[in-house]
Amino acid sequence: MDIIIRENYEQVSKYTAKVIADLVRSKPNCVLGLATGSTPIGTYKELVRMHKEEGLDFSQVTTFNLDEYLGVGMDLDKPYDLDQSYARFMYEELFKHINIKKENIHIPDGRTKVPEKFCKWYEEEIRKAGGIDLQLLGIGADGHWAFNEPGSSLASRTRVVVLTKKTLDDNYESFYKKAGISREEMPHFAITMGIGTILEARNIIMVATGAKKAAIVAQALEGPVTSQVTASAIQLHSGGITVVLDEAAASCLKNIDYYKHIEKVKTEYGIK
Ligand code: GLP
Image (cartoon, rainbow, N blue to C red):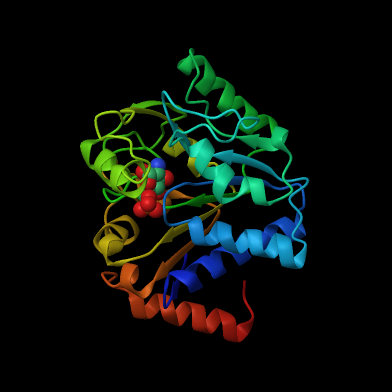
């Protein structure tokens, strides 16, 4: 596991975007797993900049988003639906600014009338695409990955989940409030990739910033692997793992000096 610590949000975003861009350049038809939340916004901004200024080409890239609220969603042909779906978020923050093909974008359909069937189909689509090359992840305040709330099985697959009060409160503050939608009107259910699904991605990059995430980041990376902190499943992943943190989010890590040492030595010796 490579734990990369940078001074601030901007540097974290730049580092993360570069990892994604390097993959897109070396494997133009790669499959990216994408995340929502306020944390990856800076990463998406930097990818948009790279597309516009450096010609970063997304024309062959396929994407799969982690999750979506159930009951909302967006037809990408009518992008100005006034909902707070993750589909809308992705369109606004990334997709409308880059040259990705609409048919290559996959986001769980929050308006499906047959959620269970849809979840199976979503898993099948990931398989048909050859699996995810690189999955971008944030971490929720209670340590969740995607919408895998505490108690989710670490072998779980794409499915419908009930959101916790804490997650609803956090996402209300970050997104719904600004859109003038009341806390009561927020969807309480979601479709999410499971932890088992996420762990099948060949590489994982997890991003966290800010002091509010420091304690939960330390639990996920250095604490026991537990379904109570689903991001702790990162310790079970067998592929390439990169965690990008700012100093504030890294501040509760016990082995912080060692992680910094690893990065220094690897840079000195040119080891990837
Ligand atoms: C939501 C998303 C997660 C995300 C989390 C943290 O719960 N489903 O994928 O990691 O929010 O969001 P933020 O980056 O805003 O703290």
